[in-house]
Each structure stands twice: as structure tokens, then as C-alpha cells.
Length: 105
Image 1 (cartoon, rainbow, N blue to C red):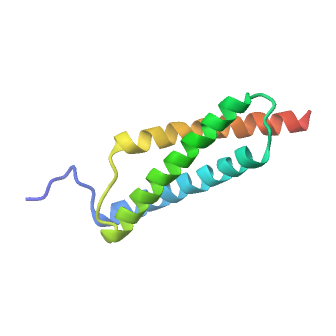
Image 2: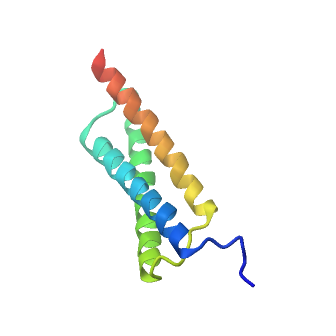
């Protein structure tokens, strides 16, 4: 008897793979912004702290992607791992939005 709470390989590939790519995309964009721009609405320390958290999340994400690939996309990732990434991406979106708004003035 199979456990109905365990997602099938196709579901993992269909949902998890693009989600991991999205995280990678937004972390890369945010890292580039923080490394190339001085954000007037953030202190140097706040900007540095956010950049450090993004780098750490990228390291975690790369490890998760390697495990996902190494297991032929048969292993999921716990929500306790994904939620902080989601919160960080949301924070990055807010920073990017403030940056764009400041440039439009």
C-alpha cells in the first residue's frame, strides 16, 4: 500500500523543479542588485546582512538541487526548508520594488 502523503516522481518534477529554478533566479537577481547598487533606503549593514542571507540561501538551494538531481528527482524538500527561502524572496521583491520606485522619481 502506498503512502498518499508522499508525492509521486512526476509531481515532484512538475512542481519542485520549477520552484527551485524560480528561487535560483530571484536570489541571483537580488544578489546582483545588492552587489552593484548602493540602496539609499537601506543602511550598509542592512544591505550587507541581506546579501549574506541570500548567499546562504543560495548555498542551501544548490545543495538541495544537487540532492534532487542525484536522486533522479525522486526526493522532495521539507516545507520547513522552503518557507524561509520563500520569505527571503518576498523580502527581495520588496527591496527591488523600492529600488525601482526610487529610480522613477
